[in-house]
Image (cartoon, rainbow, N blue to C red; front, side):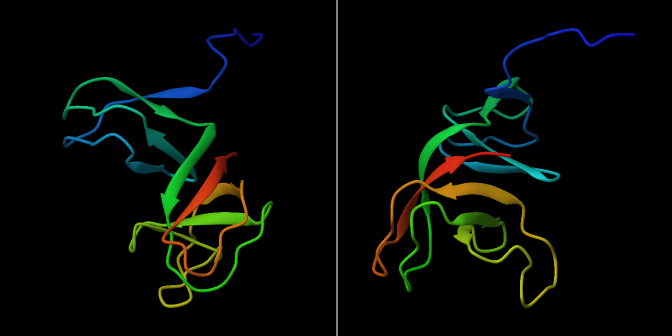
Length: 114
């Protein structure tokens, strides 16, 4: 059987078990998407799987444009660590730094990519 095109993949269908606010970072196994609109519990919505978003980060250290970024679900922030140094669990790849982020920044511009 050959493959059948469904859609371009900018978004993936997502039905959350609980209400999800717009701008929520959602981990799906090894992938990460972001809601652009609120999605009520049990309602079909969509996760953006590409695009550029401002996402929370911990201040401390300049992060240069093009740097690979990961999502730390425990802290709900961007991290540079592919593996959490405390739990040894993998952090899913989020994307790359889209704009150099100064050491005092509390958010970082991320280009989602997988």
